[in-house]
Amino acid sequence: MIIDDDPTMRSLVGSLLSRQGHDIDTAEGLDELEHAPERLDVDLVILDYRLGRSTGLDVIRLLMTSSITPHVILLSGAERERVMGAVELGRAYGLHMLGVLEKPLDAPALLRIVEQLQASLRVVSSGHIRAALERGHFLLAYQPKFCLSTGRVSGVEALARWQDPELGLVPPDRFISVAEKDGQIIPLTWQLVEQALAQQYRWRRAGFDLDMAINLSPAVLETDDFLPQFLRRLTAHNVTPGSLTLELTETRGIRDMDRAIDQLSRLCDLGFSIAIDDFGTGNASMLQLYRLPFTQLKIDRAFVAECTYDDKAESIIQMVIELARRLGLDVVAEGVETLEQGRLLKRAGCHTGQGYFFSRPLYADRFEAWYGNFGKQIPDKEGISWHTMQQFIQQCHPT
Image (cartoon, rainbow, N blue to C red; front, side):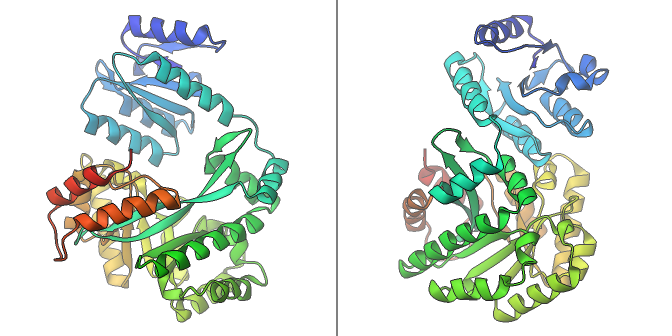
């Protein structure tokens, strides 16, 4: 689906992709799609940011209210900050935002993105995951977390990546759900935990004093031997509980609440930090926060994406941070895309931020180079200005 109020652009992009064998539909703007949102149920939406009286943000909100989650490429000649805000909003709503192409159109770049999307849309089966586990194709990328008060890197989140020789780079949202359904999330989690612990040990020996966040599925937490298995691995890698945060995903998927409370309480007693992920969305609610022994709360990116131009989103963030303060919890904001979002979060009392404004997730070798370079730029004194931090981030950001 090509959505652009410029008929010449619709014709150009449509012809380009039709010649590659793709089925094309086009729309001038939001008005005609509001009456037939099912037209948006496609593999790819190529969306102009400016659409006359509406914008790409309005189309993204229509996708959200229609529960349609295609892949999206934004075309734009607008200010980069506005466009990146739309990208982050799309991600927050669960859309697959593939990037931004500036006008005039870079046709080869568009074709490369479409070709990569075709490869990634091949069906992922249980057999694919089993083979990838056996061959060690699952890796971790590490996204830095920043202390919003000092500008220093305080930790990383370890994120699953699947680099397959045939399928290419398979995004997590295409294999995690399959692994959850067929039970392979358990061996997958243990394989990634082993990688994370080994990496944390190497970084600690190298002098990287960073907290590492590891994602845990409730399915893993509920296995009979979870705690002894986890502690054995911890001892084998000589990693201390105080250097790890365990992020519990999909908290509504917990079937045995008593067991979960017991397991998490014992982990807290041992010195682990326990985070409730995506707080404020359907997966993480006030009830889970009340019943389970969390030490950290992560603000969902959906609120961060709109906080600088939506008073409701800003108010929700302020209330969540105040709630966390009263409960004695640390607060991490996900999906920080802009300087303005970071400043607002700092003023509101948020402790930590992560997102593309700071850095994309990086594989271990690239993270080490980036972190070594960035650390040299930060002065010994605490409390650098946001302007200075932005300069350092731009200087040190990997290409």
